[in-house]
Length: 142
Image (cartoon, rainbow, N blue to C red; front, side):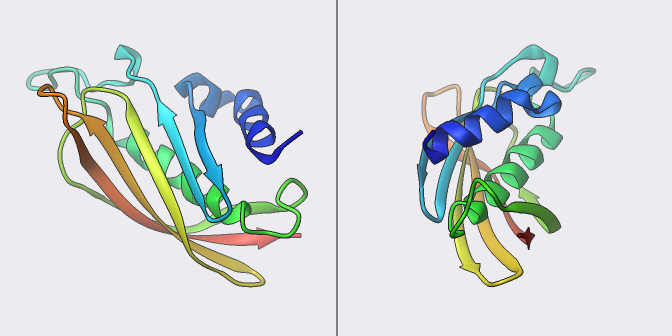
């Protein structure tokens, strides 16, 4: 099983990530792109919400993409685990469509990896725009 298929199988077996419909779109060592399809169950409710995706979904896709991108740089990515040490997310604008996150590894050391993540979504005028950016630190477990 190749690494992208391994990661997708991991996601599909994970209760929360599979609930979100998370899919691996692209993978190369140190870079990963994930997608969460728009679904009303993931939106805010109440006055002014207008079908906007809850910010926690953007944080989750960024966290997951960052950790899996770090994992992709390891010698044994399917045999090594990672856990989030620190996650910082800055929200830039609301999203009301699919979320696509690209994670790029800044550095992977022997025990910690760092990645930067960008979450984008299509706007009503058809343009893909950043909705959140973040950086995460991930503990590596052999």
